[in-house]
Image (cartoon, rainbow, N blue to C red; front, top):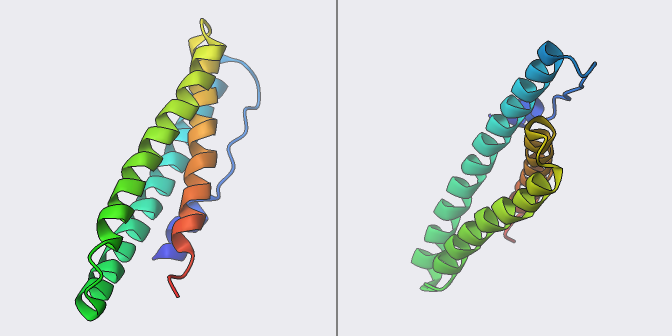
Length: 121
């Protein structure tokens, strides 16, 4: 499951030209990559949550899960703020701004999934 989702997230989107149809297809492609990465991210978050719950049961260490959950919320905030300033920098061209935001989101999501995939042990 992880490899199929990860393979979809690795698709590349290319903007062939600046005409409206090509730009629309490009943005749709970026949206699909984002959706695939978010699905992959959610899968890894769920896996780590279960792993941390098991560690809590086995060791009694109840600190890991709340800190992990806080890190996920902070990651979401980081993504939004990091990409928002890039969006605003491209305004008033809303198309370029949307593309900049989506490209930023893809990079941050890819990096976060890589971090989530690191083994706990």
